[in-house]
Image (cartoon, rainbow, N blue to C red; front, side, top):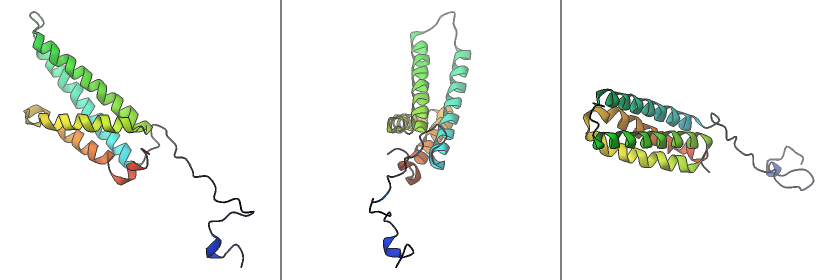
Length: 141
């Protein structure tokens, strides 16, 4: 018997035991394909949200600003800021980013009835599915 015996494949010479487990690299683009795809989809959703915000701002009458219009613009800015936080946290491997984006996706699906926001809801839903696939679960451990 020697080192080629299958029964001793996991042991180290000298009885030191198994080597320590390898740590995953936690860089912005070091994640599995599903996390990177989710990041891409969420970035596209963010860009569409910015586009919609610019359209709303262009249509506003600034000579007589209404409090409701200003409130919606501020809400959009807060939501888009939360999307940026979620994307950056998710790509760094923090589970808080994945949970934040999942909650936002739930809200985006609720507003799918608004005709012009269905692309945002669809991108958010696909991004959420991608970040909960099995390959990405190891990234968030």
